[in-house]
Length: 181
Ligand SMILES: [Zn+2]
Image (cartoon, rainbow, N blue to C red):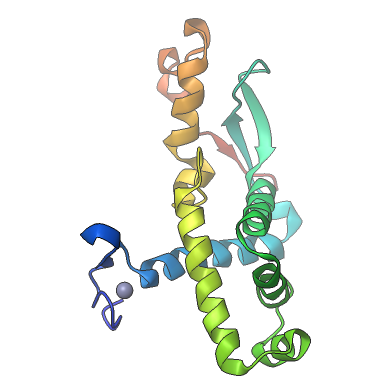
């Protein structure tokens, strides 16, 4: 953000030991992008949900069909629950998952307006970082999560040579996404 008072649009700030770190405005933006996608997944018509061909690690069949949107929503919630403390999670649940506005949240959580918005910023920054740095598959960037090469390459490396998609004709390779009408 050009108007950011800390990084003035560079997206970077000096962290501990003068190491460059992502600015909080970047972390909040990452959270908001992931949250918008979560809301879009949660509110879409079910029949528009996409099924993607997704590689599976381990001894199971090398490829399996999974509903990426549903997996994404589950990941979004589980990762948030794991990363926030109890108070932060209550606020996250009321405000982001249940859609309560600041007035309702302040009443429910018995807090001042200023403290509410500070807490929202803190939660957005915390989760933005977690969504980006999550191992082995980060939620952000979204296009990589949904059909990027990272999962594929990891799975491809574990496949026997005969099943290795690099050996397949171009048109049969991942990613293949089918639309269910
Ligand atoms: Zn900034």
